[in-house]
Amino acid sequence: MKELISKLKNNIDLSPEAEEYLHSISSNREVSKGEVLIREGQTVRYTYFVTDGCLRSFCIDKNGRQHTLQFAIKEWWISDFIAIYNNELATLTVESITDSKVIEFKAMDLANIFTKYSEFEAFQRGNLERHVVSLQKRILNQLQLTAAERYDLFLQQYPDIESYTPNYHIASYLGITQQSLSRIRKEKANA
Amino acid sequence: MKELISKLKNNIDLSPEAEEYLHSISSNREVSKGEVLIREGQTVRYTYFVTDGCLRSFCIDKNGRQHTLQFAIKEWWISDFIAIYNNELATLTVESITDSKVIEFKAMDLANIFTKYSEFEAFQRGNLERHVVSLQKRILNQLQLTAAERYDLFLQQYPDIESYTPNYHIASYLGITQQSLSRIRKEKANA
DNA sequence: GCGCTTTATTACCATAGGTTAATTTTTTTG
DNA sequence: CAAAAAAATTAACCTATGGTAATAAAGCGC
Image 1 (cartoon, rainbow over the protein chains, first blue to last red):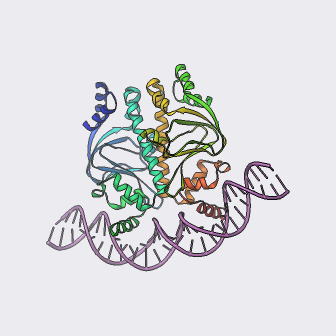
Image 2: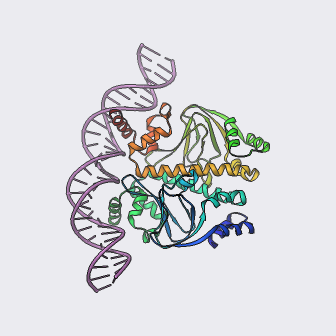
Image 3: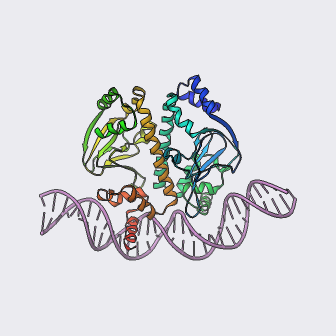
C-alpha cells in the first residue's frame, strides 16, 4: 500500500481523508502461483494493484488456446477492464504466474471514488492516457514488426520476465506458437 | 460543434462558461480528401473531433509501408495521442480520406481544460475508458482471429467504410497486404 | 467519351509461422 | 536423489500470407 500512496503523492495532492478512504476500500492479498483472481464468464468484482510478483490476463479462443493481453508487474493495475467498463461478465481470466502480493479494490468502489474525491481524476487520467499509448504502440508493433523483432522488443520492455514466465506465455503475448518462439530463440542464439 | 456540445450534455452537466470556453478554443475546419493534418516528425499542435467524413492515422515503417492505427468517423476524436501524451514529435500521420469537417482544438488547450473546468474530467474519463476497451479488443482480435475473420469483423464495425476507403487502407489496418485482402474478398464472394 | 491515374485483381513463387508429434531438458515433488 | 510433471526444443510437413510483377477494372479530369 505504501507504494501506491507514494505513487499517488508524486502525481497529485492527496488529502488525508482521501488516503484514509483508500485504505478503507482496499485489502492486501497474497496470492500464490497459479491462483486465478478473475475467471472468464463470472462477474468482475475487483481490480488489483500489483506490489510484488507478476500476473497476467488472457482470453481463451474457440480452440481453447490462450492469448495473453497483459503482464502486470510491480506498480501496475490489472483486471478485466473490458468487462468493467462495459458492465459485462468477464471475457478475460486473470491469474498470478508467480507468488505475488496485490492490493485488492472493489471495482465499484473505484468507479465511485472520482465523485467522492475529485483529486483522483487527474491521476486516473494520466493512467488511462499512458494505457492508451501503450496499447496503441503494441498494435503498431504487431502490424509492422516480425515475430523475432517483437520478441526482442518484449525482452527490452520486460527485462527479467523470462525468469518467472514460461516461454509459452510470452509466445501467447506475441501472437505466435511456443514452437515458433523456440525457433526464433534458436536463431537468435546462433546469430 | 452542435454534435460535440450535445454529446457532452448527454454525459455531464456543462456550465455555460465551460461551453463558452469550448467555443473559444476551437475552430471549424473543412478539409479535403487527401489533406494531411498531422505529419510524422512534426510537433502535434491539434486534436480533431470529426463531424463529417473520415480520417485515418497511420505510421510508416522502415520499408516505407503504411500501417493504419485508426479510422475516425463522425463523433470520433483523432490525433497523434502517442506524441501528445508523451510530449514527443509525431510518429503518426493523420490524413483525411474523404472531404471532411472537423473541429480543431489546440492540444495544449485541451490538456488544460480539466483544471479550468473540472466537469470535463468525467467526460474524458469515459472517453479514455472506451478507448482502452476498443484497443484491447483489437489486440485480442489480432491475436486470435484469422485475417478473413478480422475482415468480417471490420466490416461489421465500419459498415459503410468501403464506400469511401480504398481496400488497401483496410488491409493496412488489418495487418495484411492488399493482395491478401483481395484473395480473402474473392474467397468470400465464392462462398 | 477518351485517356490518365488510381485501385483492385490475379498469378507464381517464396517464406514465416502453424500443426502435430516425438524427444529432450528443466523443474518440482515425494 | 529418483520419479513425475512441466516446459522447451526439434523435426517433418502444411498453410496462410508476403513479394513481385503483370493485368484488369474503376474513377476522374478534360
